[in-house]
Amino acid sequence: MAQAAAKKTEAAKKKGKVHSKRWSHYAIKGDKLERKNRFCPKCGEGNFMGEHKNRRACGKCGYTEIISSK
Ligand SMILES: [Zn+2]
Image (cartoon, rainbow, N blue to C red):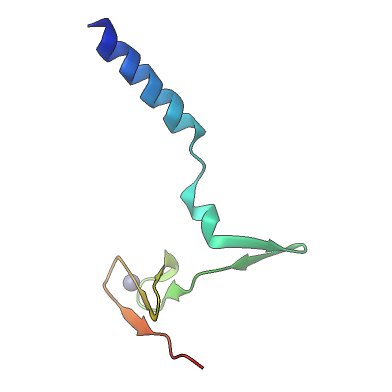
C-alpha cells in the first residue's frame, strides 16, 4: 500500500501550506487592522457573518441581515 501512504503525505504537505482562513476577513489599512465582515450580533465578536449579494448571514445561528442598497 505504498500508494496510499504517498497520498497521505501529499495531503499532509498541502495542509501545512494552508493559511488561516480567518485572515481573509481582515484588511491592513496603514497600521490598523480593519475588519471586512460584520460580526454576528447574536454570537458576538469573532463570529463573522457571511457576505452575500444583498444580505449578511451568520452560519452559526442563522441570523440574517438585509443590506439595503443606497
Ligand atoms: Zn450568529
